[in-house]
Length: 74
Image (tube, rainbow, N blue to C red; front, side, top):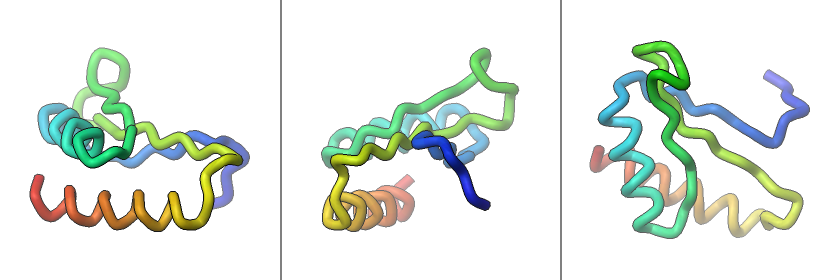
């Protein structure tokens, strides 16, 4: 789906898992803020990923690698 926003939500669902995912990403140098109830409805906790014009392809590639590593461990 095309988007004009630099903010990409990655729905995790479970609030505790979302916050753990966010914490593990940050430990590896990737900031993706965990958003949980009451900010969003229960069962829709998400990571808020923000892309910036200063991110290079290498930055994005490294971040994707970290997301894969963390996903396997959470």
